[in-house]
Each structure stands twice: as structure tokens, then as C-alpha cells.
Length: 497
Length: 118
Image (cartoon, rainbow over all chains, first blue to last red; front, side):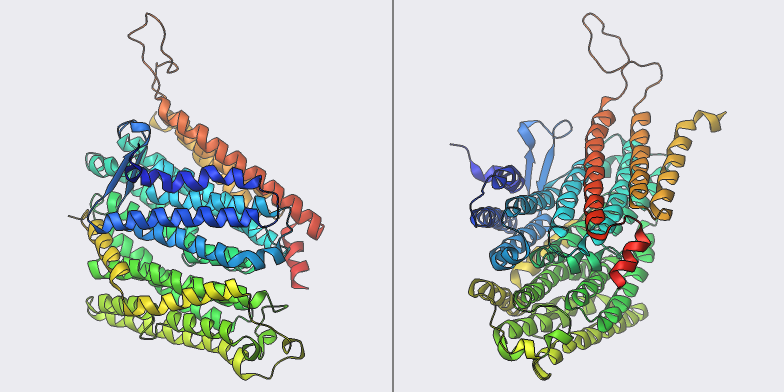
């Protein structure tokens, strides 16, 4: 009998990856959906086991094929990766569970097995990034997840998805290639690809300039992948025209995994080894974060398509996550990691509710939403709860991370007060754009075509409410994400001198 | 001549910039993809040249030879993987271009934007 527990880190990747090709064979209607939902839930259970293990103080290390670390492929799961593993697998499971009707509407049944197979590959790729302990495997898994997610985004019926996904492919590949150049430069100077070994060997390098160049390439490349303002231009169209279920999955976690790599690389490899790197890190990312919050929110206010509106709001939320990280302090990082979790909850629930609307409405413009809430009160109320969480109203998950962020900013003195002003301004703008949805749906005269609307399908509605209530639950009982985020922030900062 | 001794880095940088220029400046989607391929190939070259040890042979064990000097095989293996990634990206990109041609009837970027605006 093998001890399964010790193999959990690799199972997290292997289960979806090996079962993905099998899903292609499931031709009978609905079986591919059922199988991939089950596989995704299995991955979620594995992630929960890992989280439980990490919470009890364990750090998983795994040598693939029992080859020891310098020669074999090493995997590692700590609090930071466990937090995001739970997020990724959870978002995938929830999106799949709710998506049956939406995918039946949007994708012909003979193409569905391929679609679900690509979905599982995205899941495997994202999970792979999170468990990998060396820089090159992160690159390979990043490309697996990206290539599969291009397929997902282009999988729908809307032809405007095609130019959007082309742009996404070009920018994503440039980002990944930049990352590869950076890794190559570090390998030249240190002779290792393992992140932990890099950390040890980098200070023995006499000439630091290649490392500095590598830091630049890696930061910019990952910022492209993470849609950091002004490198976000691929994101709004890709999220808008993707099939609705894909928007739920990608909006909740895809960019956050890139931010994970960015933070891990920066804090583990660069921060203590390059003189003044923490200042460069702050000076580079903080202005971008502030601009992302202000510009992203402002553009969201003027968007009329709900999905585009939420996509621009995502650009702003990535700004909050980076703002916390760019403070390079324990409370700032904790806030940043917490916001990754809470934003995934809020944005996941919002896109789920939009998916519910999309199964009934012809178009997702605010004008076509008029009066929809009278016929679909349950779907719309869930959307409002998730919207409140996105704004950061007390009692919802969004409030917790914004509170942590404000507390962290206030420790920075005069600069902090300016940052708090930005956070507050961003939240107020969030009130405006969420209000525009609420106003259209609840207070305007119903359109002719909206009188006959019905609620979203029962299973979908159930999942929408599950995530909406999760927003409230994690706003009141914050132990789980807070403990993980604090542990993760401590271990990241533990690498600093 | 240190400048010429580092010529492979210059080739890397030039190829990288040629590819990048094509990606940014060309409006034809296929030309953009060609640019992307050149861009990626430049990075392959960076890895391959860094593994070269002067005077060394290919890293293959031979019977009876114990003092051979080998080039570093690891970057070559890495690039084998990266080439596969590059091919998949180009293939997928071309697939998308075919679909764009089917749907829009053109593969020029500004024409597509024009059609979408209507």
C-alpha cells in the first residue's frame, strides 16, 4: 500500500493532466462535463488535504521519481502555494459545476469533450506552476496553462473572441519568452534552476549586472502575464468574449497565479541578493498599482457591457494586490495575499451571476438588463452581494482585505495617507459601477423582451448562491485565509535579511 | 577583441529585436506570428550558446574515453522543451488565424477592427 498523502503534491498535477486526454473520448452527451467536474472536484479535495497539512505546520517537499533535488525535479508546497491551489481548484470546480447549461448553449455538443479536456489542461498547468520548485518547470507549466486557456477563450461562438485571443496569445508568449530570457541569464550566472539553490548561489556572483537584467526581464514578463497596468490590454476583450464559464475560471485565478510567480521570484531570489532591489521593486510596481486602481476603475464606470465592466474592475483589483505587495512589509504582503483570495471569491461570484444572466438574456449590455431583476430576483440578489464584497462593504470578504490594506498603508507615514486616498477612491468608483448594474436591473422599466425571463437554472443558481454566501462567510469568519496569508507572507519575508 | 568575441550575444539581441519589431509593427497576423517565431528562436540561441564549452565535444559517453571535455547538456535539453512550446504556440496561432480568416474574410489587423466597429 503506497502512502498517498506523501504523493499529494504530484497528484495535484497528475490527476487533471492524465485524465484530460481521456475526457476527449467521452462522446455521449453530458458525460464529458460530469467527468471533468468530478476530476476538478478531486483536485479540489487534494488541495484541501494540502491546505490542512500546511495548516498543521507541514511543508511538503517531493522529489519526482525519487531523484534527489539537484538532479531530479523537485516539487514544494508551502502556505502560499496551498492558498492558491485551493483557489484555483475551487474556482475551476465551481465554474464547471455551474456551467452545464451555459456550455450547452454556447458550444456544440461534439466539440464539448475537447473543450473540457482543454479546461483540465489549464487546471493542470496552473496547479503545476504552484507546486513547481524550479524556474524552468514554472515556465513549462505556464505555457501549458496559457496555450490551453487560449483554446478555452476562443471556444465560444462569439467571433470577436478570435482577434481577442490572438492578442492574448501574442502578449502571453512575449511575456513567457521574457521570463525565459531572465531565467537563462540567471542560469548562466548561477548554474542552477532551482529557486532555493538560486537564492544561495546568487550572492557568490561577482558581477551583478546580468542578475539585474534578469530581474527586469522576469518582472516585465510576468507583469504581462498578470495583466499589470499598462500591460493589461489583452485582458478586457479576452474576458468579455470568452465563454461565460471560462470568464468565471480565468477571472478568478489565472492572473493571480502569475502574480504568485512574480512575488515568489522577487522575494525568494532577488530581494536580499540585489542591493536596493526592494526599493526598485516598490518604485516600479507602486505607481503602476496606483494607476491600475484609478484607471481600471474609471474605465469600468463608463463601460456598458457587463463583462467588460467586470474585466476592467479586475485590472483595478490586480492593482490592489500589487499595492499591498509593493509595500514590502509583513502587513502589506498579508493584505495582498488575502486580497487574492477575497477578490477571487467576489469576482468569481460576479461572473457566475453574469453567466446566470447570460443563459436568459440575449445581450449583456446594461441597456438590455433593464428590469431583469424583477424576473430574476435570486440571481440578481446574489450579484449584489458579490458586488458589495467587491466594493468592500463591512461584513463581506472584500472588506477584510481592504481593511488590512489600509492598515498596512497607514504604517508608511505620509505616503500611506496618499495610498489610502487611492484605495478609498477606487472603492468609491467600484460603488459607482456596481450601482450602474443594480440601477439598470432593479429600477428601470423592464424591456418588452425581459418580461418573460425566468430564473437561472437551479443547479447554476445554487452554485451562484453558494459563492455569494461564501463571500459573507469569509467576511465574518476569516481564520482560514488569514492564517494562510500570514504564514505565506512570513515565509516570503523570511528570505529578506 | 572582446566586442567580437561576444558576437553570439549580438546575434541574439538582433534576432530578438527583429522579431519584436515584426510583432509590434506588422498588421498582417501571419507576419506577426513569423515575428513571434523569430523572437522565440533568438532565446533558443541564447541558451544553446551558453552551453558551449570551448574545445569540448557533444556530451555523449564513449567507451574507453575518460578525459573528454563535454559541453553542458542541460540548456540543450531545456531548449528542446522550449522549441516544442514554440511550435505549439505557432501552430495554435496559425489555427486562430485560419478561424479569423473564415469569420472575417481578412487577416489584416485594422480591417478586423473596422469590421468589429460596425
